Structures are given as structure tokens and as C-alpha cells.
Length: 270
Image 1 (cartoon, rainbow, N blue to C red):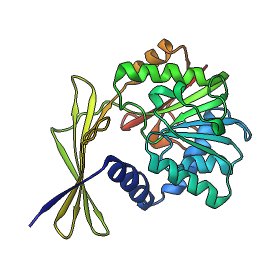
Image 2: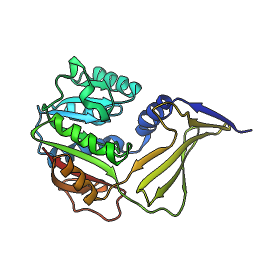
Image 3: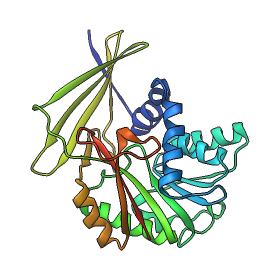
Image 4: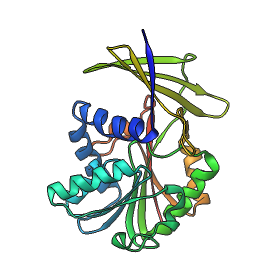
């Protein structure tokens, strides 16, 4: 008999998906190194510079930056991810600072270890699909807030979801050691919004799903953007558009945009 079990947002999304399942993806750590090398190139960075990693998750990419000699400050809304990132850095003897915070309110972050935020970063990066969760108005405010953190000439690297048509509602199953992960997705063309619900289906008949909590939602809702829409948002945020790239082609030398990618990247400059 099937049994439904609800887990907290922190347990389900942060710990299970952003750490446990992410680390099971074949080649994920090689991908992190490739991504960081790409960011370094297109943002024209050099070791020793200061990087703000917004939505840093468990610090996997921040770790690569630190290994290359960058000063990294990571911000994430999930306390368990920040704790994991700190543990990673301590275990490997790396220098870096991690702060629990909301990217919508960077200016309110007060952490003496992180140092100053305004006008102090050489680059700000939003990697692994951390942009688009809050709707167009708040996304614009996030870009404005990012601009305030950058030095003159500092760059922002934003990975975002692009509009994609689906045939109604799609279901995707992926096998795990003790069962399956089920993801139901759909795309609302009218609002250019991607919706998804995710479940863990264990072999013992237990279905695990996220528990709705104040400030968090069981369903992912992500605003998708075209390149022209992102360019307009950057103008409003007083950031100069530099270039766009396909997220599937983040290898050096940079390649032209591809029409079949589900994610793109924009680079802009203060």
C-alpha cells in the first residue's frame, strides 16, 4: 500500500536535491570545473579577485573558484546548504565565507566575516538555475541589487531558463538506488512560466513530497526569459549587456547561441 510522507523544504529541496542527488550526476564535478573556467574567461577574471556567488547551494562551484585563488563569498537561503558549504571549505582547508541570506535583499545582509557588499565585488555569479524564481518585477530588483555590489567594471554572469513549449504536462522518471524520482512539468506560454512538481517514489511504496511552508512552495515556478527580455532588464538595472551564450555550450572557446538549449547565459557589466 502506498504511503505519502512530507518532508520540510530544507530536507527535500536543499539536502536531497542540491547535495545528495546533485553529487550522483555523472560528471558533475568536471562540469563544475568547466563552468568556472568559462565564467573566468567571459567575465575576464584573475585569481585574487572577489566573487559573490548568489544561490551558491552547497558551495561546489565556489570551491572551484577558491581552489583557483579567488576570494569567494557565497549566499544561499537554505541554512543546511550554507552549513554544508562551510564544512566543505573547512575540510579542504579553503578560504571562503558563506552567509544565509535572500538574494532579493542582499543589502540587508550583515556579516562581518563576509566584509562589505556595496561596490566591492569583481563579479557576481548566478549559476545552476538560481534566477527566475520570484517573477519579473523582483528579478529586476535582484539585478539592481547586484549592480550595487559590483565595482565599476565588475561583471555579472546569469544562468536562466528560456521559454520552451511542452506537449501539455510531461512526466520524467529517473531511477535511484532505492526507487525513482518523478518530475511533472508544464510550460505556461501566456506567462512564460515553467512549473514543476517533484516526488520521490521509494521501492517500499513510500512517496515523499515537499511540505508547503510559509515562504516556500512545493511547486517550482520559474519565469523564463528570452535574450531580448533579459537585455531590457539589464538596461533598467543600469547594467551594460556584454554577451549571451548557450548553457549547453559552456566550453572554451565560447560558441554561438544554440536554438535547442533550455538555458542561456547573459554577461553584463557595471
